[in-house]
Length: 285
Image (tube, rainbow, N blue to C red; front, side, top):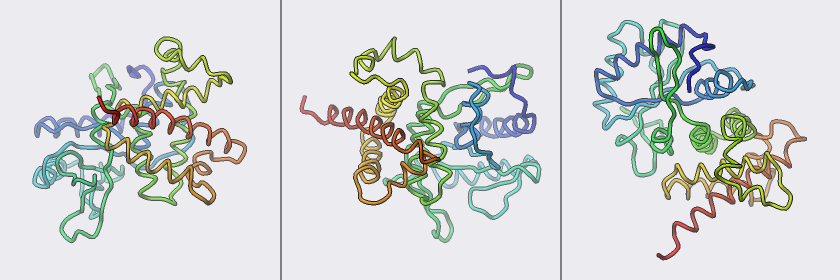
């Protein structure tokens, strides 16, 4: 994706270039996640108003150990542009911009979590980060100078946001972002794929363009996720869609009551495609 002609955030470009220099020197791969990735994809990439402002910028760094993570943070501080502020993964760039430096990869335990040192009193859920990184997209932000970055795709953002919501609920901002991403999925370069790659979705008796987009999102999630991650997503959706109560994921991702029933349709479509992929994966060969 090339958004260099309309990207107008010089502070972010300066921040990104500083991070790139450090990451390249340490041979550490990274990508942009969170609300800033959402804004780049929706607003700059496809002219879709994201609807919610963000105050911080989140990067995921693929590191093998705490020593490598410590080296990364120290190298960022050594640039003179970053300062540690005593909030685990959070740093400040140029004394103002909040930057979250999130480790993933081999540093994560078998449950997809890390426990922050030294006291181990804080856990962070990083499920899905590796799958999201492997399926991230390259975005050109500037031509002169050339500045490019990998960001989570729309499906990757849904993957990360769903685990974040489940980990942090009842915080609603993750659910709001999920609703925006789901309702926008056909508008972020996926509309033609219904006709070119997934024409079976057109054969539904009560064809609905937006519901078909949710089915497509479910298929994309199924494709980018490892079987274990798909299973964990289905655990969340089964609990949220089948359990008693007020369906908090549906309600909060709908953002307003008139959209609640359709949002439930979207989540059911996503679950249907994930379940189909999971059942196919475990069938005897």
